[in-house]
Image (tube, rainbow over all chains, first blue to last red; front, side):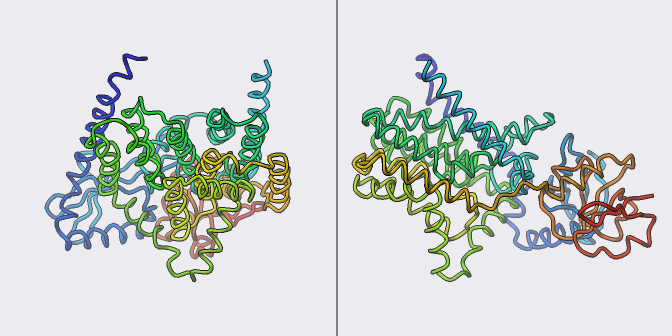
Length: 103
Length: 388
């Protein structure tokens, strides 16, 4: 145990670096939302409108990526047992919903 | 042998408290954690809860674990009070056991309970002059913040722990600051969590200040069944425990901005810290313990006991037995407990989605269902339509 205690700072820093790396990787696809206010408000309106139309519960939605005029979202239906996950593309111009090709 | 019997007795108490909470049904926030739904809290606590999702009685298992942690943490209190007389030590442990927030919150599967326990460990570290493990304490701070944002309410205690340590100043700053920066980064990567966090933070701002003060005062008194609440606060002030006082004020302000019925437990470790810091407050220990038991009994007698199964559980038990495939559509406002009880995806009711549905639950009027091929189930507490 004394041996482990000697490395307590190392373990703390390694944990911090790992957490930071995971979060930065997750931040990557969301970066356009923070740099472009217009895109952010359009995305918010589109997600809320689509969720409303499709009966989705907002807490099940996560943004997968934003590329060009297409927004990809994952919808997870939370329930007891294995949660079904679906991927959808939403056109940022027309709002049209499609199923992802690469999922 | 005597200690073993005490542990068994405490465990029986914890199981009873967990079973008492389990007599009702899972609450919406509990369901959110049990299903690992990613808002508003960071993932550490809820991910661990979700590991046992395959266990049929997942909810009850965690209720017992949470109740055990809260009840058995009386040993940590006994350890902090090791210099007390046996009577004072017993009184303090009794004040803990009969605190309303232990009685009513220990069997709830809520992050607030875990945060309070983490707060208790920080109070123990503050008052025990322990300074051999700064790295582990920094890691605990990180873990606390990634269990629930409210861990930040104990920031003054954490700062006080590190200020006292004989380590480089930059290490102290990093140990406290880096976990907070990572928490901020987590919020940025979760827009929904951020929105929910901001929304919760300002929801009480419209209330009159007198109402907010009343709610906060009641919460503080309820947390320690009044006796521990008063003794703890006197102890904090007379013992000049500024870190505890600042944390106490943070918890109070937090109550004012976004009160929830499961927040009083945040006061508990701070109040215990106050008594430990100023043991003279227990001068009439036997009277205090007797009063605490009377107060706990009074609160229990006036509690809103709910032993009825929720309609979500009753309805979904029926729905889960149906052979049809498809989604469950729910009309009206509903909580996550409906998802927790369901074996099929749950969607909000829209007439256009009826073709995907096997069942429609109408918590409010749902137009158009009867025109489709659905029949209504009777003898059930809600209006439920099933595909023919």
